[in-house]
Amino acid sequence: MESLGLQNIERTILATLFFDSNYFDDVAEVIGEKDFITPFHQLLFNAIRRQVEKGEPATADIIKPLISSDRRFDENALLYILAQAPASNPIYYANLVKNASLKRELHEISTYIAQNANDEQIQAVGMVEEIERRVFALSLPSESKGFKSSERIVEDTLKLLEEYKKRGNNFLTGLNTGFAELNKLTTGFNGGELIIIGARPSMGKTTFVLNMVQKFLSTGKGVAFFSLEMQAEHLMLRMLSSATTVPLQRMRIGDLSDEEWSALSESSSLIASQDLFIDDHPNLSITQLRSKVRKLKLQFPSVGAVVVDYLQLMRGSKTSSGGEGKRQEEVSEISRGLKLLAREMNIPVIALSQLNRGLENRDDKRPQLSDLRESGAIEQDADVILFLYREDVYRKKEDQAKKEKAKKEGKENEYVSEYVERDIEPAEIIVAKNRNGEVKKVKIQFNKPYIRFEDVANQDEEDSFSPKDLKSRFSGAESVTLSVPSIRM
Image (cartoon, rainbow, N blue to C red):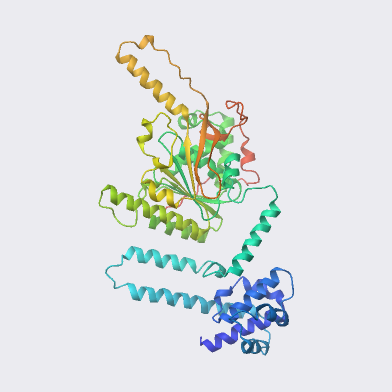
């Protein structure tokens, strides 16, 4: 399409919007400001948009004084537009503009390929990743691409403040984690954030994030879960135990009553009706993960969170040849890649992380930021870093060690254990980094039989517990045939 012909098409659209701004919403579903080839046309379209959003008239005589001081303003170009006849079907013309815009983008991509395909210093894997990113960006709304002017940023910020005002005292702006105090500190898990959840083995970090996943699903958000350590079916067993209050151990041996089987059937249908996608491939690179998330998001727009269990099991885009320095570079690439994915998709990415065993030698074994493995890049890229801590895990280990020592010394009968196994154990979420809020310890509890973490029912009585009704977690979901969606691309 020749440039002059395209300009006339753009003029027709703008003339139509001047004549009847009721067409704007339909046109804006197809094209955005950046799809116009002429800067002055971009300026006009943006000005019309602002008027429509305020519910005010968007005729040329009203728009002109609003934009006349802008350096892109063109008096002659405005006269050409006003001389254009309005279209009876502006959507047809909008599709022509969009088609031309997409072709310009594709031409840029093909130019990138031609310029770099024969460059031996550029890795093919990196090129594929960049091409895929650009092609995915073509599916995003046009308004999300390119620079934003200060005027536009101020407008969007004021709209955000208006939304905050409408919410009143409701501080939750992101995904509900299921933990009230954590929600207050973080305002929920927000789009574009990288959240790291670290813990030593046996602390229950997989269970902890699964509890959050169940909460996300119950609010209508889809979840992409990458499990590099555990099979999808084993994850589902934990979710079912948490949802039904049927102990996991009894589920594993099949010792279930008719009532429990009925509860499992009901909760299975409820979970299967949610957009949960599990990839349990054990050898996953950051490039593969981003590719899979892009494809999944295009197919299922409801996906509102990504979970990685766990970060240190992932590979970088290049094969590492060993050495601590090389591994730190690889983890740095993975960490940065996850943060970029969160920004690109505008959804929270939650990555679990192992901690260095050095903390085991401290008297206070509560994790610190320095305990993160290859912590430099992770600490820098993360918006929120949470540590999970259960004192009873260490108390049990210490008791077992003392018992073994007494046995070796022949004093086994004299040893009196001070450790008492509890079904409900106190636990802590340590908010070690919070880019937009305060750092603090949050008291929760771990319900061992049902493999789930919960808010403390009564802060003064940590052992008190009242099982939550399953239906309250999945209210409004329809019953469907049991099937667990699983993505293995």
